[in-house]
Length: 408
Image (cartoon, rainbow, N blue to C red):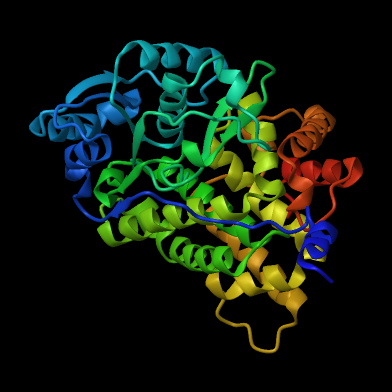
């Protein structure tokens, strides 16, 4: 059979995943290199940048550290620190106008996923015409003109946005949508574990579960490749061995270092193959019920893995070793898969996060509405290609019911 015939037969079931990074700096103290990296990326010794962050990062003193590093390098800085936790198109239109009118040479995103996503969007809209909504399409790259230089500096260990192709926004219909383009990735990613030391315990836990969700969903995925598997499995091991330590002893620099690495690995794995039904579920509940993205992923993760077990038993069984399951001798694949689910459930509980929607005061009578929303998001995101278990209205409704009850 000719190569093009093979591709026609198996596409859209196969995908040529790829990673393309301009530059990644990882290590202790590398945030101090930000001025040098701006000069290299823009070719200007006296550049003007827009620093996008949020009030929490500002209060923790992290914005001032980066501002000081920029000023020492004689970089002019305008700071915007009013970023929304779940940025809406209305908000993104406002920040886009700031980026368009400011005559900036570069944009720096400092914070968790939201400030970095806002920074990506601002850099795109500074050079591209039209409305923000023109560029948010999960299944199609709409960005045509090279954005402003973008530098991402995460202050949490979870989203992987510092290396991903995506930027997130809540559209005018209340759905979470995405820019999905190689041009949305950072020109320079600066991942410094020192930036995560002040992250409080519950946020550390939630962000860690977001990282784990990216990693697990990249592995329990019909589109997984040997490259995504390598990143995902090592990242899962890092989360398993370090998240509890980072939550309960935030000054443990080794744990913070390894969690920062796991988040970046998750972002890279996610760039190759994308998510399965898990992130579709978390996006279906998070914006509607004001549940943070990481917290939503903590609730969803053990349930969606249980949901996928019949169609991906061997893959889920493989996770057991990386999730810290020690006693595996003589167990069948099904038994090992159940051990994997139990290990994820235990991790969620150990870091103090919920396993059910009822714990978050989501009304039980909303289950059909949530299930319907998840099915619509599945179509919007094209997740039927990636999720091992087929999605139907009835089995998704049962999955959401289990999530509400907390029955894994």
